Image 1: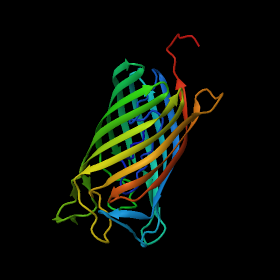
Image 2: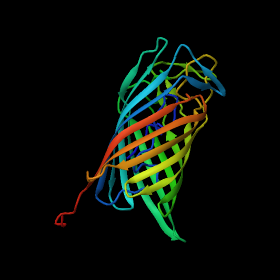
Image 3: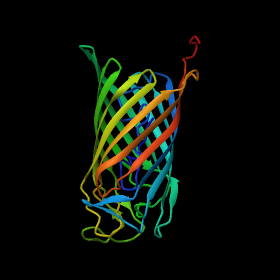
Image 4: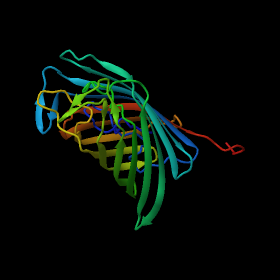
Length: 309
């Protein structure tokens, strides 16, 4: 499964994109077996009332508590044991408890990724895997990005490249991954805008993003218990001006800590529960977000023609 609101998306933006972990994602060391399809439906919510305006940590009584809710549909299919394809699509809604900004809602960005295990080695009972992931995403509706912090997305097409190193000893593991995310220019519904200078155009050049993540925990069969640290670093952009609204090309950095569980439901032959939570401990031009996710997943096996049941 995949969740590119990050991540699209990505990845801890001011609008509280819900980059929560799920089973067999683009950031873990797990591969779906050949001819197996894992489908997942999740409900996610994130909220904040404090945020970083540049490095200044503050509250804004004209916003109150800002929250983002997302319902996501994700799938992961095993072309082979070493090659998986993943895609996802979320429906997102936002609101604030104070001020005059109106809520927004709609379908956000469709994401697609290909995940391939290039290398597998066993050294002194430690199993090492080296995995590469290539992903893209694109907006699926005409939502505006020029209404932060209540926009449901940044309306930028993305392309990403990720490398994953996974080490497993018995049923314990550690996974380290890093990604570079390219973001296309964004078009606004106005003919000029101001960043650190006046721009007489409706096109905004978006800074690209580095993302890194460390996950450690326990996994056995379909049971997964883990904690993670996630860091997003925007390569450029500028700070929110004093008492101004955030802008789509702001420098948005965030460090998050969280936990994730995946629990199979006994005697259901493939059905299970997933859940996670995360908290933004450090940031720049982002909200100090607490987010959680809960959902259901189902793994189906498709046999080859003529295969015995």
